[in-house]
Every structure is written in C-alpha cells, then in structure tokens.
Length: 126
Image 1 (cartoon, rainbow, N blue to C red):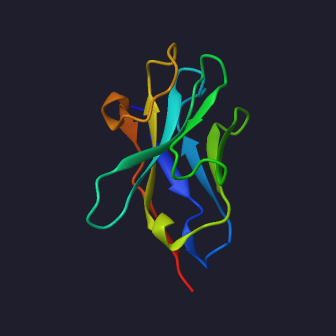
Image 2: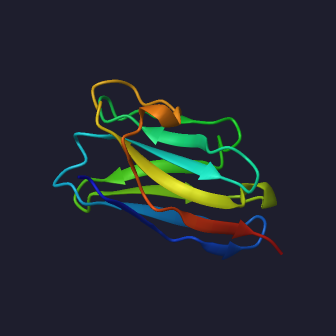
Image 3: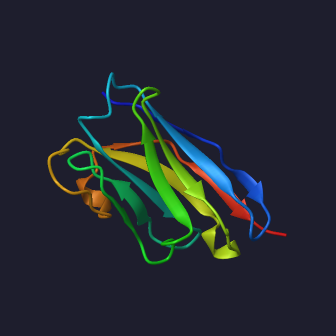
C-alpha cells in the first residue's frame, strides 16, 4: 500500500510563496502519475496540477497556471508543488495523490487516483 505524506503548508501573506512536498513510501515513483488537489471550505476537491510519469509532462488548472509548478525528485521519492504569487483564494487543504496507471497522461480527475495523502493546510492571509 503506497503511503503519501504532505509537508510544507502553513500561513503566508498574499503574494508570498510556499513549497509543498509529498513524500512517497514506494521504492520508486516511476510506477505512478502524481497529482495535487485542494479543497477549500464549502467547495469540492479540485485538481490543480499533475505530473505524467509516461513522458514527464505536467498539466495545470487555469486557476494556478503560471503561478504553481509541480516537479519530482526521483532520488528522494518526493514530488513538490511550488506555489508563488499566492492569493487568499488559494486557501485550502492541499492533497497529493498517486495514480498507478502510469502509462497514460495525467489528468486532474480525482476519481482516477488510487492513493491519497492526509492533506495539509495552506492559508493565505494578511
């Protein structure tokens, strides 16, 4: 059973930056596509970024495109979400997730992901 653990959340002022980490228990991340999701109070969980193991491509939701960046460190079995120019509307619980169908391009649909982290709070406020 793959385990994912997020870290790096917290409180940041508008315009600031945070980097979230997602550490995986698997020997390698090559068997998984990885996605980042978030859930704000009263809203549904939305996919915001994903990394395709198949070809190394990335995909972003329009709400974060140009501000967030997903990357992977194979040596550390960790996936990162660099978040810049943060806005109050980015406030949410952030989750990383893994899809064991690594041989397809990643998607931001939560239903395809098989494993989830416990989530971490990000609050953007002055």
